Image (cartoon, rainbow, N blue to C red):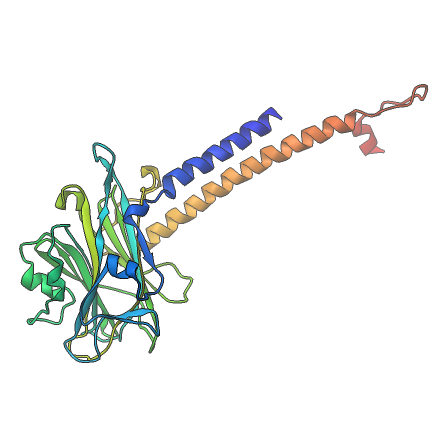
Length: 336
């Protein structure tokens, strides 16, 4: 019985530690929109810029109009905080996910941007007159601002992305079949790990159970860029010369405690899409195996305790007085 109690205590302690480490979120810096509708809460927390507008019939946000050169965006007005505690030394991580649709043409671009709390949000309403970029307004009107973002397009000619960190711009391409059928949706997941100072971008087709893959990643220290670790997030879209409408169906941000260091794989190399996915799958399998081994050990201890208790009860046979009982060992019975 003592062994059983110790095993159960260890199990509950393990669950408590795992929950406290992996599942602790911060509601003050998190939000989730599973569809969009006109409400006081929506207009209090969210701003629409450019050609973007709410579409009540589909509970979505139409980011661009069906005319060429259309640009639109949506911005969450409350700051995201990545530092906590009195000394503000405890670094957190965050993730954002959004579901969207846009045609598979090179000129159709969608971007995610993070800006400091001092940023003038009115710049989101300006159109870039020099390019068909979703983040072009930053290049033209916010050259002195410290911003972080990326934009991407998905087409039959290949998947391309452009990363913006401060005043530095990086161009890259990433592999994977992300072509959307007419009316189809694509999901994007962006994760920032505060411990490794790394941002990862992944994609998954709507309705698919496959993990967000492929993805690209890059290094950035948000705490160093913005003193205090506070920033705001937004999405921007541009259709260039394609005259296509882009739609946003859901959007959310979650701030959380990063997992322990021992659970991390080696830092990913910039722009290595497939290799990063393989490393993550390997570590995921190792985690499952470790969890299975722990559960198996606990099950074995529990079964041993139950067997011991049953054995003790079976050995306590009540014999009527005066009835002789012949003691026969279990081994001898088995031979007979």
